[in-house]
Length: 406
Image (cartoon, rainbow, N blue to C red; front, side, top):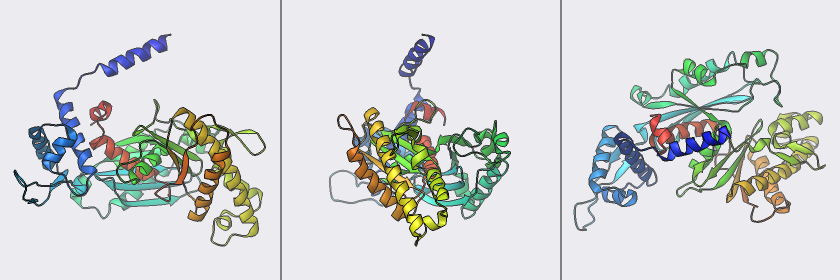
């Protein structure tokens, strides 16, 4: 009962909050930046006023502020011969701000940097057998230094912070992937945000790896971007995210849409987690049981035994992923599911095709069979998405919580 009352108070406290003048100004700035970001050809003051519903005088004042901050550029005057003053197109200045992103994964670390447009500038990736709590933050700092080595001092000053993507469970002895000797103790109590800030010197914001990768897939679409889709990343485990009604669905703790932890039935009718069937961890176990090396199985000329093992994994993974997507679609309606993976393109394409076929046979009541397609990046986008999400929250999101964090 007390929890329900608390939720009611939280709801009314949220909807009843007013907006101070400085928040109104920030909201207007972000509305205009959102308009500019969706039109690479440039937008006139009059067009901005029409699209945002703001008064022309307000638009002019906001554009002056954004120009002083270095966030926009003005183009050459367009003389079309029409009535009134010639239109001057306004553009996003891609070098107006930069965001860093990093993914600390189970078996790799990756860093990336994106500009104000959300475009990837560069990235670095390094593999390891397992994330070592004693060295991974030093590796993070080194890779970021390498990434920024070509940036000018002025551009470095425009870095707004670091988005850090990470899965839950690294160092957890109860996880499917057991930590090496000493790592459970080393990871116990580690503050990811605090350690990353100390190692890099940047303000750090933590985000779930599946949500970050989902956001990278969302940004990779051209405008107008799809407003409702599910995303699955086949990595060490199955990371996931959902875009619902044009928003990243993160939930209260930031870890919603954990579809890899969904229970499904395998080919024998046993109830198992999606992670146990459709992840690279599951593929590696299958290959090891068959006496096949991963490099052989995922290489250009796999042996017959390797092909058989991969074929078997694809069949089982497709059934698990199809059930997962149908189940998720009964809770949150979405138009399609994008599947990405740290796999050779040919193997990933076969998996996507198998899921698309399998999903047609999963029992369902109602319209709950989304289309299935491959993702846009051809790799994990968690580091890239973490940077893009950091930039979105800093310069585009009009949610009050994000403006208050500024």
